[in-house]
Image (cartoon, rainbow, N blue to C red; front, side, top):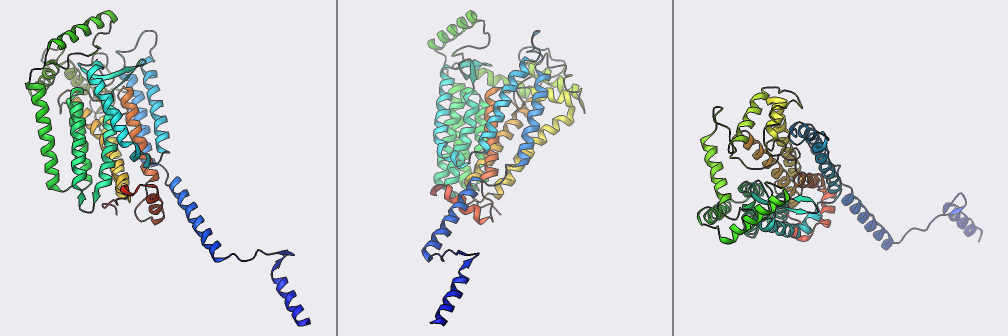
Length: 475
């Protein structure tokens, strides 16, 4: 009995620490449940807090904002009133601040949400585009915008981003080891043709931009060359049909003439010259504008040509670039900003070259190229196809528009109204491009990198089953 008592006392001593009884060992079921809870918590933490937003994309974006503030102030001399010198800059600054708020919001929003609302976003933007084409306000000879509560919204800018998001969703679902499935190619081509046809009345360049971005996204997805040729043939047939309808078939009717007279009467009453409702873009006038621009592009301009309304922008843009030289006249010292029409928007790159010279112009080009290069690097690391398509689609959209703007200003492309992203004055463009930057930062933060198995498992749980296609170009 004494031996048993001693043994009991020893066990009791071992099971106590500082006189407090220890917790009995958990059962096997409890240990398994605790391990599962730990894994779920770790997955949620990984899903919510991934990598930091890419600092290089942030740096490029901030630099473009700084350049925008300086150059808008320099290029807006024709808009400055005697009472408020800083008026144009303050108005533009409000949109830049709004764009910054969108970037901060979007970078904290997981990119997976884009997939859920891609079709709805595209549908709303298409409706706005149709409304602007039928009854929108006329800007520079084409019905491009909708005026709501004193604000002018250009749906064509929204359409570009919505189509990029929709194509990323479609291609992300249909990505295969051999490229893109037939369903993905056909659906993507139909989406682009439909939106391109609706964009046509808002400007030929917008349609070409949309098709070019879609082609790049398909090539990034590794589309097979046979399917790629089918897509190109579809685009060619679609553009040919639109050209026949718009440029060959007469479309001016008595209704069009009445609408033009009403628009002129309304503008005379309100004193808003150049901004009318309805406009004449439904008739032959807009087609003649396109044809005239192409003819003047191939004919070229000479310093000895008489300056008129047809060549004013091109000639003064050339003067501004020539005046810039290698290092420019210095910010704020532009001479041509007071004479160049739309110097603060469609031709701001020429003012940048005049202020900062060839060096400054090359720096702007380099910034946009670095943006797409950085997006390509991040896309290459993504383990899933959808975020890779999404970030590269946004980057290509931004950079292509910048390249088209520069090509128009430098005379490599026929005249067409395309703003320089983040720098040109224009509220809708600034906000939409800021949203694209926010999406890119969201992908850089939340997309799992190939090789990180923990992040990949968490990402797959967040994505729907049909969006879990692997990024086969990832290392």
